[in-house]
Length: 310
Image (cartoon, rainbow, N blue to C red; front, side, top):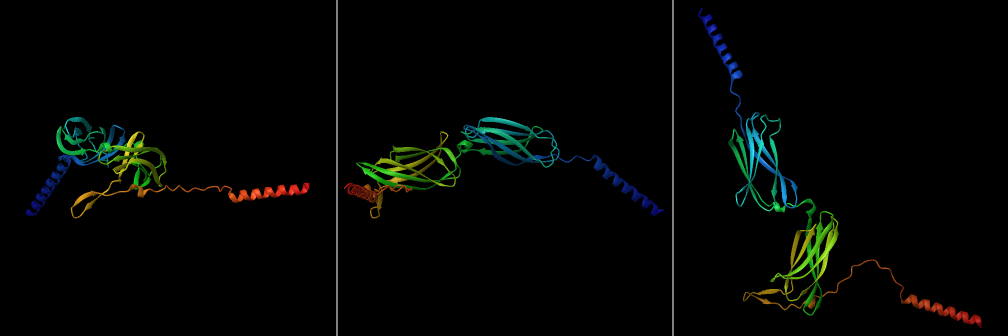
């Protein structure tokens, strides 16, 4: 009898435990909702002269179901801290399988820096915040004004001296990674101490990628001065690149004993070189030997006619 009672009690207890499990599964509390910012990436979408449009890829970690959640983006001027833009994006209640990214495109003026604040709101309460700084937008260049060039070397050659002026041949060796037919080069010599423009020249050339381009010009400047020689590259009316090299026609040296500078006697005429012409195929013209032979043949014919008449 006692054994039968134990069996009954065991069955009752097992039934109660099983019933409790079934009730917990059927009527248990749903999984807790959560959402927070994981990462924010930026991509350039479009650029013009005054504005840049950026695409923000906001990655979030979230539960499968999130109710009443919103992504808020605030754009502030970095210097004045004034609010310039505010954007709200409603976050879908149910997560699409495999997707946890939110794309937002914003346009910015290129002449200032910004502070961006990203907030996740749930039931109008902030659950996560991320702050980013945005600067240097003025370095983003429209496609029609991009320039892919590098400077390889620079040569200066004195080709003449007259009175107080020196004629200097300037050669810039430039490598291009793209073809261009709308590029203009500006070569100028600026007196180093006064920043006065001494001479300049403008050149428009077609550029072929993969080849070293020689950009050459003669500049006439007063001697006994030092110059900053610049090569500017312009495209579609905009200055895109500037390279600078120094031309010293009045060098100095340091005297070790007294540790001071003294002027070096610099005879610029000693550096005058006659420019060598660019070699090219030439057609050989008739020389003096040919003329002499022709004259002798003419005289011989005349003499022969004279003998026949006799």
